[in-house]
Image (cartoon, rainbow, N blue to C red; front, top):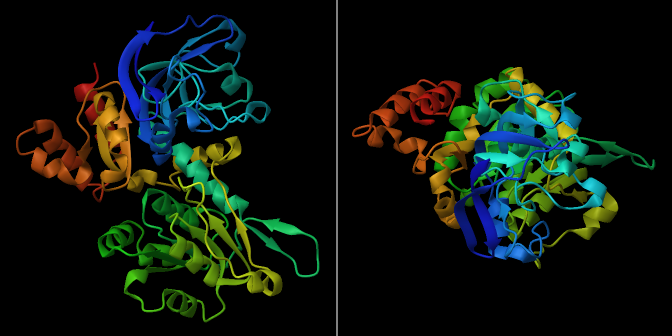
Length: 419
């Protein structure tokens, strides 16, 4: 079977191509990809090529399919996996399978498996590590967002706290504690707000910062202070760019005691140092944002480390249980990560979008791999709808859902454009 896919050949070299997939065989599974969410991690792989930790050295002669946040339908199953999968099953991928400690992953390392493709063959490692997960929904974009949500969930689980005088680490955020999300209104920050308000281990105080009023206003329109209060959380949005002394301003919201849990969503030295400065006794700072600079560093107050037991953690992916939690919460209506998405497009726009990703404003770019469609901002639907009926109807649909991408919009788009 032929697939159409975007493949990485090396640094700054990705190409949309059609090629033949290997036969499935007894020990394989083939899947049809429906949706894929674009992650900045792929841009980093594009910049580094074979120098990237997950990209094979021979990528120039054995190119790999890019992207790892994908969802779709099982298309063909070899007999050795027939007990577990069948044609027509929905699936999502947990790319971080860590088989025998290896960093190989779909979307980086494999010639025949990645999210920016029409059809893929699932690697044996992924199957063996139980990372091809069932997804029982016909809303595919939620499945694509299960992977980034699993990274957020992992971050909350990876926070830890110590007991004074005891050699014990209690894992997870402090229930009923004080939490800050710094630079927290980008796509992953929005997901973190959603999870903090709706998980079973909530903070009592949640403070979300940024330096852009428009981004903060959008976040507040989606996750309102009133809704947070109904969830039992006191929520504040703060523009730290307008504060003369940002750390002091943030500490004042805690009554001066500081924050038990702080997550930093930007690899920016002053933001990291701000996070360190607002920690409470036994406070945990999670550096979520992955820098591309291998020499990135920031100052830590080691006086507070010694006397205040402050500490740093980091996560760069979720595990299979985190993804299962994300799927379960979405299926129950507890999470709606649609706020992450600001653009949609088809497979034909992936090369240009990936190459220029840092220059494109907004949040997640959602790709539907079975269609061709220029990358289009949801905010531009109304304007494009003046000349294109497809976008006029999509604008009507998203307007009825507070400007967010949604199941009805996805169904309409695929009905009208999928071949």
